[in-house]
Image 1: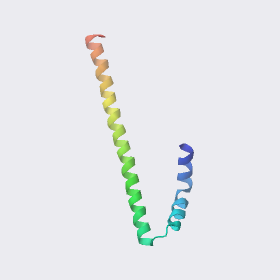
Image 2 (image 1 turned 90 degrees about the vertical axis):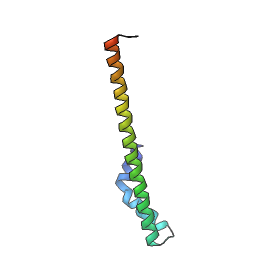
Image 3 (image 1 turned 60 degrees about the horizontal axis):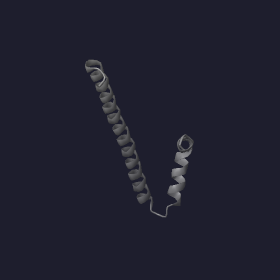
Image 4 (image 1 turned 120 degrees about the vertical axis):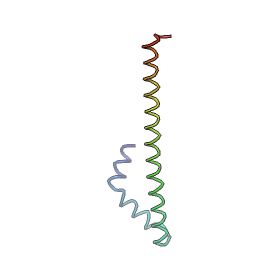
Amino acid sequence: MLYLLFFLLKDGSHLVNLILEALPLSTYIKHHLLMKFAAVSRATVKGTVVVGLVQGILGGWRSGLSILMAVCYGDR
């Protein structure tokens, strides 16, 4: 995964240009598709980050609550 990420970051713009040149569509439609793809990609990354944060907060809260209960009431 890191290997793929490295080359996507390094050569990403070149790959996008190659793909856009290979598409048999008008320039307007190519640009529209690229903008839609970028918007969906950004939304996916943002959604993944938000879900990760919420899961981390809830997991930390649950762990803290369990530790607090064990300290206050003893291990049951």
